[in-house]
Image 1 (cartoon, rainbow, N blue to C red):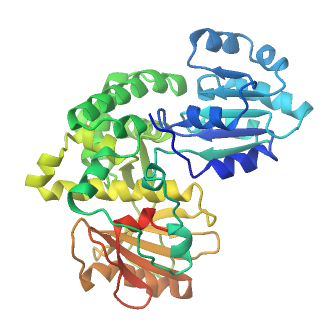
Image 2 (image 1 turned 180 degrees about the vertical axis):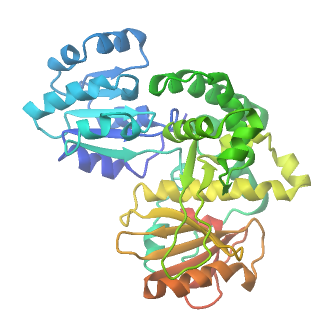
Image 3 (image 1 turned 90 degrees about the vertical axis):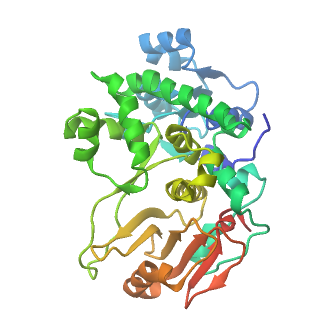
Length: 409
């Protein structure tokens, strides 16, 4: 399998130079272990908590395990949360930067007591499945350009069948390495089963574990839609509270991502409901059983997958973007909407609408214009990303742009 340069490498190296503990957080099989082992010298001790004996030793005596370590790289640290408290005591005595490089396949900040145990001592960086810019060996300044008000044409565009293929494959290295849709689907099924059956048990006590795959399939059919927990729960015989808890676990394990609504006080008649997305379009396609042949006969299947694909690409770019934006969505009761709104810490706004078509009309900018009026001078750019190959203006700071701009210059 090829080695990919990861966009977040610079941020990890910078953190190791001035922070005692660095955690690289992200889904299983996205490349965390490969990256951290490549970053550190070969003589640095390496441990993985996926090894049963190592895990048993740490759970039995986390303080003793850490006591004799000068530096270490430790994989899958979420499997032994008590280890983080032992690491805290160690770095309190020795605050040299870069002592512990950790990886985790669950968002440990949501685990009890973990967030406070290493506050001020640990920097957390996120590694998601591969972005198209990483797969293709291209740098991408898409977000920095967007916040500067620039829509720059990509070096080359992929459209039509080639774009559909990229969407259906997604960003997991194992999926990229399999050319046949049925082989990708087989890996995806095994992956989801392993995450649900093993990793959920590490972070939560679940009574009805067998219901979680059914809930995940239900979420797949609602990916990109406003989340209705009561409706979801009813589809598989769960109560509303349990469904909310289980969806929260999927988010902790980087299978799904909740996108909160964006609003300003000037806006009226807002829909203040979050959207829920799968985090990877390849996993979503495999869960839904969508193939190139099915899309060829029913183009409407591409819409939700393409929205997930673009959202995932933007999330990946945000992990190494200097502006560090937060993602939202917008919808109001007039049915005007914007699929993705990015806001940086200065209040600057970029809006992105996603269209699974080769043409764009003026009407596609209705939601972006509304957002632009409210944000005023803070509105940097509004884009309709489409299945085409040209950047075209549609008004002040408004452009139709190829989806390939996401991995452009």
